[in-house]
Length: 273
Image (cartoon, rainbow, N blue to C red; front, side, top):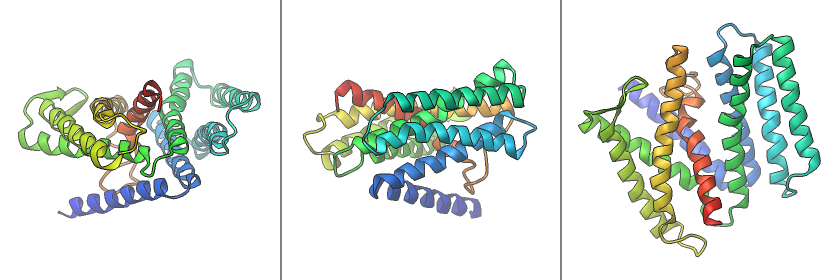
């Protein structure tokens, strides 16, 4: 009971921070994403580095945040990308490679793993911020993505516990079932219909846009969850951190969003929104 209460309280605080950052000025979401990127990069570093130092961890976080701000600040200022920002991004990534190779003598495999964090963690939050900055609607689109992912996660958990019998991918995540996946997908589809009907009602969206989004984001969220579970199993850890009581680390909470946001971004591009 105590664990459930702790999990519920920390979960509500997390939801409140997400919603508040999206409803305030763009700079608040810029800062919120930066905070999540920084903590996630730290957790990613510790996940793949058994013996680490504060300096090595700081360098990983520093370069991750540098890439995030180099791309996101021009978006925030509506100045777009230019040769200087692209050049600066290339310089920062090159310096990061040199530090890993020369200072920490990382092998090619370790180097590629650390570089992959820029795609796995930094890119989705850059895309999320870009979507939010270009959003002209009254209700933030990124919040709609969160709602669909949260709905999928919640109802997948409930239906999996109630009627789950057939394992989805037991080697990676023993608790996930096909019944849970189906329940989450169905609930997300219903939520997508409700968002279309009562929230995103402007001419900006097609009548079935959020239903389609739900049918795409629910599987993407599950794949993101399974991918992070696979990483943790490979490294023999239960959670990526303990910053959120009852939930684990920030990566444990955002694993689904790291896959859902790029899928939603592609959907927006294809629909020309």
